[in-house]
Image (cartoon, rainbow, N blue to C red):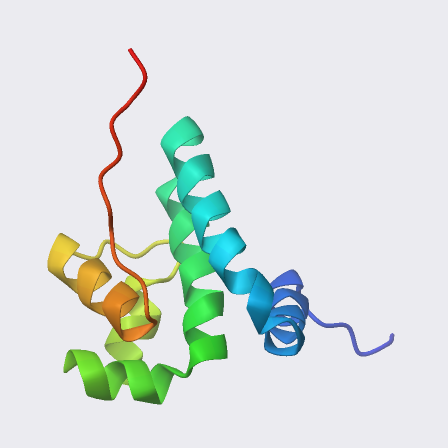
Length: 102
């Protein structure tokens, strides 16, 4: 058998090579979460981006441990709002409310 990479590894490699696409991807994953409510998919995507941005750097800026960040952003994670907000800030983003169309 060959040595295959996981989808997350391919995705992480892609964003390392194309960091200019991260902004659009962040918007997309939150839009998809808004539509389907799949928190596992959202957290998994944020976990990939945290590795691209540097988990050690994020840990240092948030005061969370590397392991805590990886666990919080796992598909089975259950992070609190403050942790997600801190992680997003450390990655250079913020949560921003947007009025829904009536």
